[in-house]
Image (tube, rainbow, N blue to C red; front, side):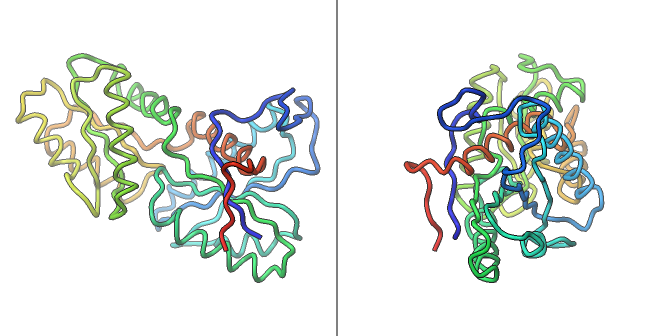
Length: 283
């Protein structure tokens, strides 16, 4: 059985009618394991970053009364373990799968559900898989972007700074729309002169092209916020292109940011709750 979770604004806390959480420090044996599915990369830095993020999720789960939550990574490609391998190693029962993706692109809508349907069928009904929403869009992602820009020496909302929001890119219109909404809301929230979406692949403008366009339009200073999960080919490409085009700074990928760990536990709670108004079965 495969169900798709909803997207409440925050994870249920202690005393919530939707979920009873134990005291911090206690260990829950009945928690469905969490399997986080990332795209995968040949660059070893990417998998290392995913593992760092999952360490944060485990630590945060401990503090919020989910001690003992089993959290595992799986990768769609470029290296093991695959989602099928991770799920096949489970004895059965409920499990929550989350796509470690920043937009609702093809992978989260098509690739991962297909893999999960196959795993569910192979289990002969042993596994009850709940499929949660991707990391983005979510307001905490903007907080994480600002964290990484601050590390690069860029204060949030600097009135003399325009921003390029550099994503991996997708041919999926929904994914591009997600990135465009993040850019528009970020500009409105912080008052940046401009926040221009750009893409490392599959769509335009490129990060270098966006930097050049803003500078040509009179921007005093242009910085690039990397809307990427982990280091790798795209992150290196974004940095090299942007600096060559005249960007003053390029932030690191979001990586193991505490905001992402919080989003993951929010998505976990939503998928586990199985809100009847939002849950959808994937046949």
